[in-house]
Length: 208
Image (cartoon, rainbow, N blue to C red; front, side, top):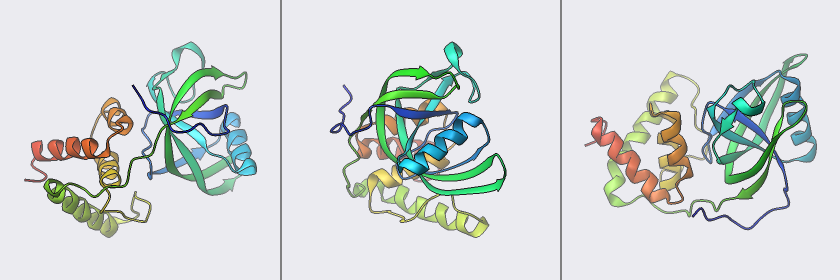
């Protein structure tokens, strides 16, 4: 049974179904041009609130109605940067925050999905187990390589001393299926999530 955190005063939240999984602490960059999402971003900026990102099981990001099916666990996205390149187009950057379970999803007349939200408890901060040292070190090396190549897909601060942060960043860059990434994101135990990542890396010879 999924354990939820204390409810917040957010009876319904706008949703952005995507063919990606947003992890807590993760970076999400989007180009916004559809009217429903331009309005959503405007509302979120004005009211200082996040929107929910949910992974699509079927359907497409531009669709609505019965052909769209998404996962029941998503992640709040907080706007950290909004740029307007040209009229009617926004470039936004968001930080993944608290996970949630959604209920009673509805598609509005304009095509925007909303749902009742139950926030989930955040990962408890905890140091990676000693057996995970090689996986932590490999992520440090991966970050150094990414920094040498250009923009880094991770938002600071870099918390290599936190099991959940290390597991989440690995999940973002590993070549996993969308379904696998979602299952890992939804796991309530960060140590288990990191252990599964460690097993995958060892199976591929990335760490030994």
